[in-house]
Image (cartoon, rainbow, N blue to C red; front, side, top):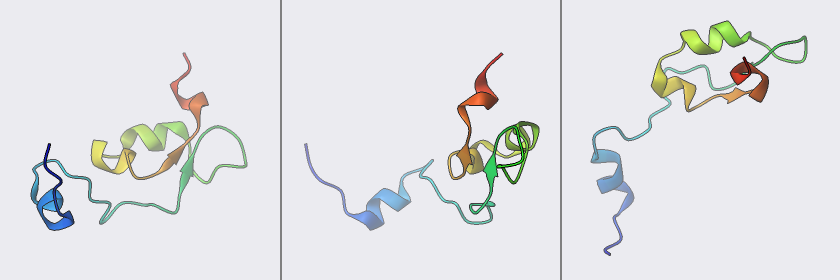
Length: 60
């Protein structure tokens, strides 16, 4: 297996980029979170990978 440089990793389609995402927010129920679970699920899939989210958002 060959190691890839950072520049080559960035060029791979689907690589994570948090540009434009609200990375300083956290999501979950309760007053200790800055945003709700509903707001988390409204984010793009890419941005969902860039933010902190409570496990409570995934409980049914």
